[in-house]
View 1 (cartoon, rainbow, N blue to C red):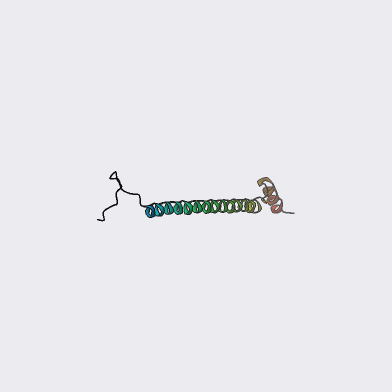
View 2: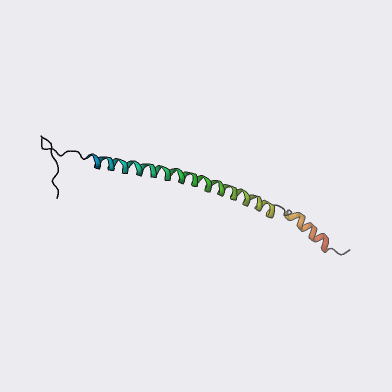
Length: 86
């Protein structure tokens, strides 16, 4: 192992290059994480709006398909009228 430089009190001398590198790495990681969080938030909003629009479309489709049925009493009356001999 390499010997570390020591000051007059016997304490190790701070390594300025290492301290700069550690700080740069920490700041870069924080910046990348915040960017990723922001992009994930936008993605979540877009997916939420898409699912909301899909749900509204399916409700409209369901009413269009199932909402046109005649009530049971009117259907029964129409069938019995047609079945009666003239």
